[in-house]
Length: 393
Picture 1 (cartoon, rainbow, N blue to C red):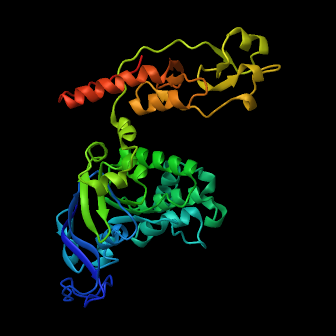
Picture 2 (picture 1 turned 180 degrees about the vertical axis):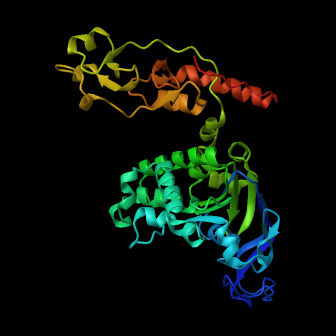
């Protein structure tokens, strides 16, 4: 657990702000610029706490005070009950993984040597450290063959994966992550987020995560701390609460006007009747496609998995992959109301594709069929009932 109690960071007064020097009491009075102002919050053990807010709200300053890269002017920060000010800096940092925006890898070291860095500094045998590094390289979703490459030979997303692996190498109980996925494109970013959530489900680290992206905060956080400019805590809440009940106009504005739609991500899909969708296989003839009798026809793979929609009029000979329209979302039977609605709205046919957990097609649904379920949930929530989430059928 990481706990902030009345923590303030003020620049321009007697406190130098260095990691190893300066007085925590810092006697600057009201002088100096306040980066973090009387912050009190708790990041629970084994959970992800996300710090989010506009530029200049003190997110990174807050994060870097935990490992004493920045010294607080006043207040107390404790990790698992120990005041960080009383700890040796090297000891403190050895118990924390630290991941930054551009990975911060050593350019002259191979991937495996980068990941081995901290265990070797801690005196771990070279063979054992290498075995642990190779295990982590695979765990973060990298091909083991990349272990011998240098950072310059990797894509941005691959470098970030190495950065996460390096931070995990000494198995630290605490992870500090400063906008680790913001420097990559949206597709890679989503992949990294999903991989990160998978790892966290396995490892259960105590994570303090900084981002400027409210969508990322809502997706990753067990709880989200919204900071105002000047480092004042505006609201600390689980994502669903933050979206449904922002504490004031600032939080409501920062979370965004579409927060009601995003809140559907936390509403489990109820049991709904799905339509049996006629399909064709990849390689189907134009005659087979037109026999379906629909302008848009759903194509499936050999295992019955949906692979995309095809416009019947565009098929001259047979259904090939270059004719597939892949813009539609595929919702899961164990997913959310938001996924169902998005599948229906993004489908070129207007029929949202729903697949089982095994990836096979189950059926389709329209937006008109999803909306009543959303309204029923809203009514039940207003009445104080808790709607039961169930599989879509």
